[in-house]
Picture 1 (cartoon, one colour):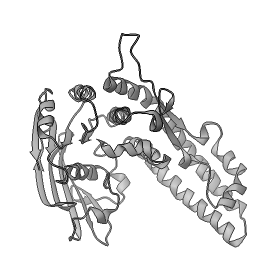
Picture 2 (cartoon, helix red, strand yellow; picture 1 turned 60 degrees about the horizontal axis):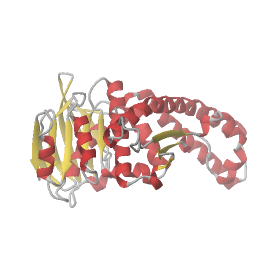
Picture 3 (cartoon, helix red, strand yellow; picture 1 turned 120 degrees about the vertical axis):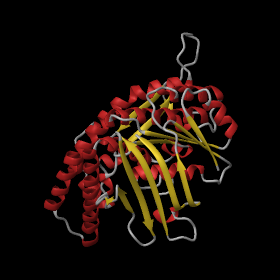
Length: 367
């Protein structure tokens, strides 16, 4: 799958922009504030129907305008595909594929597989569990529409159950029959989601470890070399007990707090280095290597599921990484298993000198 051409109208800082891309490597370079990341975000927008950096649609419209349009022309399995994402203030955002509007955005997810690696990904380490759950769900959903449907249904039932708990508290009442219905629905959907998350992470872990070792260059025949041991653990209440029992046993707690305290919406990923939380004990370089390895493992997982190369966006990838780690990443990118790649950087000379070491065609775009 190749993005051949991108057109922007009133998107973020761009009034109008049209770019044609190389099928392999595309480097977008320029000073900060020129819109390098915005171009990558527009490409992300075409795959997911939303911005990676700012989910508030109106804030992606150029200041002073009331709409934006993003158009992408792709070659996918020898067919031309045109995707258009447009938004106007006060109206619902639209996604079109070859002129036909999607009824539901979820129908589009997975059609244009894509992975982004950005400095903003550090939020996976620094922020709360919701950020890490969104990562898990985003990866699985690209290759499993049934999972996405289950997740949407679970969140809907969860919202309904929480509303019921609030109703109980406000009206000093209780309806066990209705609560039982929600409990059973959450158990059915939550069990399916938990099973797929667990399977996904079991598959991802060895791939992730291999990528981290390559980036960190920690594999050595020298027994005296300090090896960084990294961990990725799935934390879930359902690991120890079924959800239906948890919901039934904690009805009083849920009524008191007016919120569902047990379920897959409380799941988390634990990131560790040398047996400790990487958030507290990992250096900046180790944390960034950890996230890049995680995202490259995501790439491999999605590629296997979709049976095609996802587009890879590398936003400011060389920032805060030492030269050795950059070289390891470039070696990975040089492998034929990657398809089309987009790289943004503030240093054109640095970017081009690194890219010239890769035996692939490339284009440079200076903003």
